[in-house]
Structures are given as structure tokens and as C-alpha cells.
Amino acid sequence: MITHVPVPLRQYGPFRPQIKVSVPLWLALILKKQGKCNIVAPKWLSSSSLRAVLESERGDEIFQALPFHYVEIATDLCKHSRDDLQDWSSIYDLMVKQAMFTIANGCKLFFRRKTSEPSGTAKCNLAYEGY
Image (cartoon, rainbow, N blue to C red; front, side):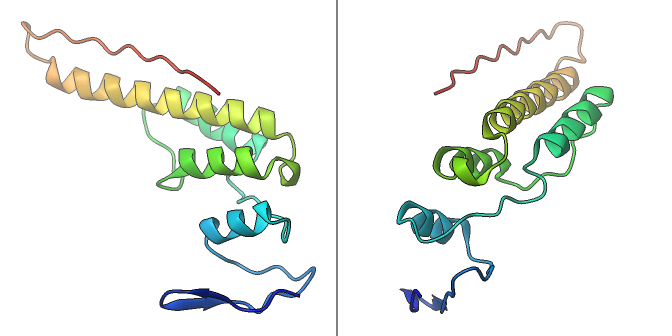
């Protein structure tokens, strides 16, 4: 059993084996690296959910609801909690496609508004370098 973890202005714990608790992502990743917990991925971070979001955004130019830092969250979980994610490589690939598609759509919408004048031209080239 882990006792309290002191954190400025807030204390988390006590933690008991096999009991799910909600903690900030940074604390979950620290405990995971120490081998003291398993991380339960958020519902939006599944292959089926990300596939549905990607298909929905391809169908129209409306951005879908995902957490504000979804790319960072998904990247951290795919890096440090692979054994807790089902099919993490597929999730990571879909997340990258989703992020790139969202960025490309945002660029298109932005440049469409900026280049509505006949003299304006703009280009949006995106490249992804995975790790």
C-alpha cells in the first residue's frame, strides 16, 4: 500500500491495491514509471472513438470535441503506458492522423478567410516526423 504522496497545496492518497482512483495525469505517469499503478485510458482514447472522430471531421469542416491537450495526453500515454492500452500503435497512428487532419482543416479555414481577396495567395504544407 502506498501512503500519501505530498504535493504542494494538495495531497493524493492513500492508495489501495486494485482500487481505481482519479489522479492528475502527471501523478499517474510518475506512479506508472515506478511500477505502482496501471493507467485506465480515457474513453476518447480508443481506436473506435478516434476513428469515428476522424471520419466525422472528414465529412464536414466542424471540429470534433476532444480534450484541449489531446495530442499531448495521447502521446504520453502511448509512450509510458503502452501495456495498459489495447492496440496502442493503432491508437497512436489514428491520433497522429487526427491531429494532422485537424491542423490541415484549420489551415484551410484560416487561409480561406485570409485569401478571400483576389490578390491573396497562401499555402499550407504539413510534415510529420514520428519517433
